[in-house]
Amino acid sequence: MPGKGLTPYQGKGRCFGEYRCKKCNRLWMSANSWANCGQDCTKCNVRVYPHKQTPLEKPAGLDKGDLEKEHPSSLCEKCKQLGRNCRSGRF
Image (cartoon, rainbow, N blue to C red):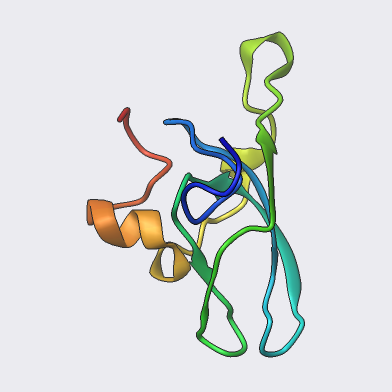
């Protein structure tokens, strides 16, 4: 049901999120977005929750390109909760 939780997506897996910092207006996207978890803005160090989240596309069963880019764990609320990179392992 919309309006429940801190994020639009309320599923268990990772999804694609779009973020906008309300303090500095910085925009970014991340394929490491989770329900009710935010990411810190690199300019303001303010926690930002995604305003839009969509399922990850997995062409031919592969999560393309995502693992090639380094994930800034120090800015990710999910990584902080887990005490490790949120992309490694199953939940």
